[in-house]
Length: 370
Ligand SMILES: *Cc1c(COP(=O)(O)O)cnc(C)c1O
Image 1 (cartoon, rainbow, N blue to C red):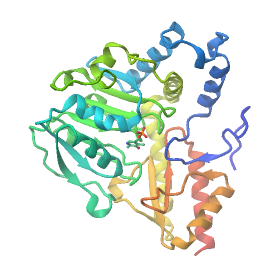
Image 2: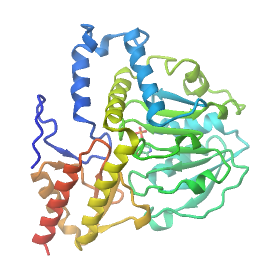
Image 3: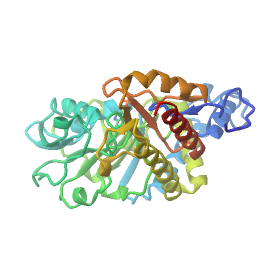
Image 4: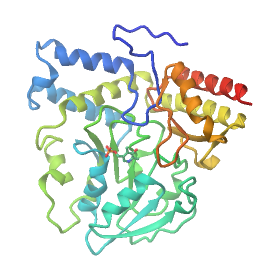
């Protein structure tokens, strides 16, 4: 029903609700593909230039500056682009922040939190301060105590698979414990006081770029407090000293991040994208709530605005619904295998028109199957 015009075959004609890697702005794909052929008129591809050339240094510098600007970071906070995806941060964080005899507090809110917990246990003690496992991670526990002696508190701001997203951070800010957050699937999707966090990490492939790079934002004052030897490539301090270029960085992935950050700034920054994200999520949840054949799985106050998870009362209709979506060029709404049903990911680059179309398909499917 939408009609984007693009010189690139297919771009913009598919409504992409994939959970990750996921949709990026069309203009980012166009610019990135041009840079593979001829980067900034240099006659060289971005894939064949040295990472220590002024050409690439400018990309890294702009990416870092855009993160600082969009997140309104203070001078204590450093920005790194690292290899290994968010899963590497699951162990790199405790390796750099937690001594063997110390305790870190972790919230157990879903598949991703659980993985972070498992890795942290290899480096120190883990205190699971709350868990939503009892209800299959369909809500977020509130009002749990966290010991002031905890080295840090780790939260997952948005559980990409279960579909829960923390909405109120005030209780975390007031705990008086350094705050560490996995923001892989909602980074830069909404306003937040990012300076309140000691460490934020996010795999780029959900909301800010291509797979292969990981954004780490950290308060440099939290470093230098562990006694273990840290391998060079996993040492935040060394990465800071070397401007994320201890070795060859994932050049192209950093470039795609930079382009996406440029796009976000042009769109009006985090404030503007939050308004659009709210509009998209409100419309989709309203549609689900109004149609008895669909059931949202997550407690109302904890519903994610990035990953909308829902099931069908009559599971035998699931395939037929996915076929109806496919007919309208809607892809990526099949649920994660551990939850079933459906998951529609509404990342920054997904236009409202795609959500409107999905809602239309849901309504007419519900009418037909009433
Ligand atoms: C996708 C995801 C991860 C894992 O990211 P990788 O880059 O594949 O390691 C971790 N945490 C969250 C919240 C995610 O959504």
